[in-house]
Length: 139
Image (cartoon, rainbow, N blue to C red; front, side):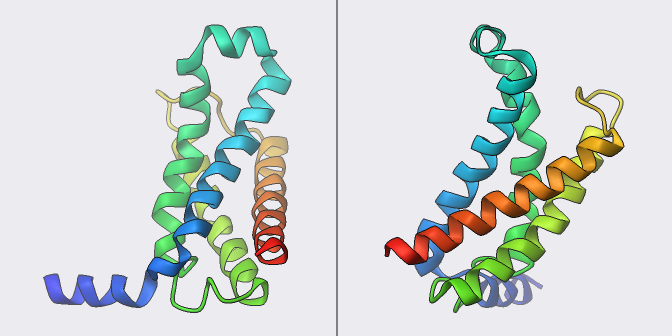
């Protein structure tokens, strides 16, 4: 069993994709931090850092679970934007669903309004797609 899990992750994780992974996490955090600041104001966010963390945490958790499983860091992902962007976009579809599932729990603040479902999906797709495209243009 342990070998099967190790083999699975060997096929899904490539160390050369580490810069993409760091950037992806930063982009997800930045996108949802910006939304939190937009809706609540910078003074509120600075005065309540736990609120910001609890807002972005479901999306980071969703990404950390979905991205490796769906191949966002698989061998070849760090070779070109043509490979990397689609892997990130399909991973975001699942990561966003996980995050929204977490936010729908009664003990998690934020909730899941229909408008937010669309916004979180689109902003995540755009943010990750732009980041990964820019990464390969500047590399």
